[in-house]
Length: 387
Image (cartoon, rainbow, N blue to C red):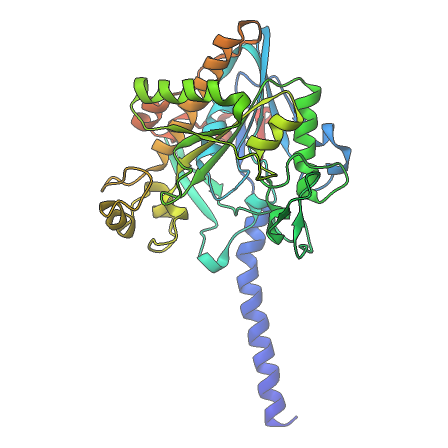
């Protein structure tokens, strides 16, 4: 064996070892789970594939926590992790599942709506794979995902994604974005099957209200708001005005554009009788002109570059040395969701939805969201689910 060949073999071996070492954390992240305790208000747990059999056995199939009140009333479908790099909605709905009790009506809660995206990452931007939330009994670890589903679950991407059924041409990667594939189709791409299953749930169960929880950059005008189509606008406006007046945080309403297809706040209302709402809370982590994408930035929302931009009035939200901490974002989602249900119930008393045990903004900011997560080691094993 000559020297040149030996060098090549050594280089190939080194590359193989480095590749394997880099793959191990990604493999572990993809196969990691997050424990969720079905609290006193959860009456059953179903699968999204119950409404679309083509999802069964795929990464698109997820748990849906059903919370039925003793008294019949209206119904709401709540989803988080549509974009798994916007985790405030996930934390809010997890606290809902673990603590709330529905007194009237029914809630359907999908915590990891894009389960594949929650197991994906964005190494080019240096995304962390996990973040931890402190509780009274220890740390709860959450996966930090990506906006789009993993190509391991849906591939190849088309050159151009053609939205179904409106035929609008979208970016190639939008086929893996569950906020571009509504209303979906039963035999389409995996993410189209996910949104189709959710549409079937809402149609078959006669769901009145749908809420999709997101986060948006401080430099993006559609942030700190409720996005709603015309049919949902009055309720969204009343909810926004009420939380701003009564709870002291900014919120406004943005209209759902009729000429941009595939979004939950557009298609749910167009293809079902359901009233859709999409909530955006500011998340400085997603802004481009920031420092490193660290867990600290994700949790406390503090960044010197954004602070400088704020002083130059380049942001669309107020921003100072306190940043935009996670508890504030989660609290806003909780209060806005509760207020939407309240305003819907006022307008539709025969279909009202009432619940208790779910904290509002001030409580979450004061206590920290970790206070509302329960220790799975002390829970009944039958009530612990792994997302």
